[in-house]
Length: 304
Image 1: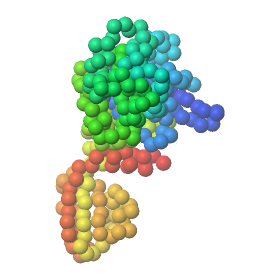
Image 2 (image 1 turned 135 degrees about the vertical axis):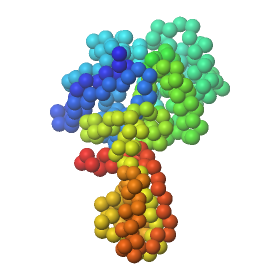
Image 3 (image 1 turned 60 degrees about the vertical axis):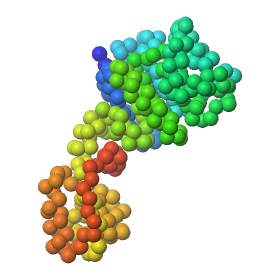
Image 4 (image 1 turned 90 degrees about the horizontal axis):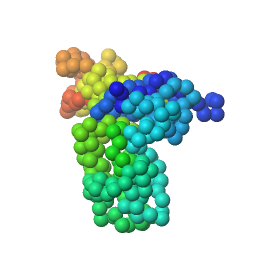
């Protein structure tokens, strides 16, 4: 059974803006799944539909087999969502906030788990502090704690580390990685692509409401970008035959450093041969493995 099953979901706003255009995804139990895309790609709209905060115009979404519309109580019980926005009640302490969140799911005597969550998110010393007195980073930790308070098997994190310090990012990922190892399914949206590359087993990329890439993180990096040869020239120019391999077109203006796409190690020698024939003198050279950011930029530029 899939943790999240998304089938041909469509969503329009004002009858003209198509936020989601037939999105279909299957996220398996126990996955750490990345949902990536530029601003306006439809990520938050999709998460709102998964969470039951918005309704799709067409298609369906289910959480562990429970439809988010027809069987919404069971679907909500199995899902924890950390939203982008800092939403909190200013009249309660951190502990009171988490106790109330437990009550929404019918959980009594949940203090042991609340204490454990606060410990792992470094909130213990803020347990009796009023929510309005907390910094932005601390409020975001509470949002994460609220999403986890009922021990949901499926966790959705929508830009959880946006604008927060390095300490919180490390604390959060350590705890979430532990939950994933224990069997929780985690879905992450983030603009920090290095986080997605380090954490996510599989990635889907959205653009203009459509899925434009879906594969394992390693396969995407290998299949789409390969490696990169970074060449610094002391003199001479890049031969015309190598211009199509340049990953960053703006480098053609500088005329000294070029990042060239190579599919395999065997491609390096022909490139060096062309440079020698053209009379270019190499000052420095590095062969680098492409990362998820390179893949993301290449896919988004190719889907115009």
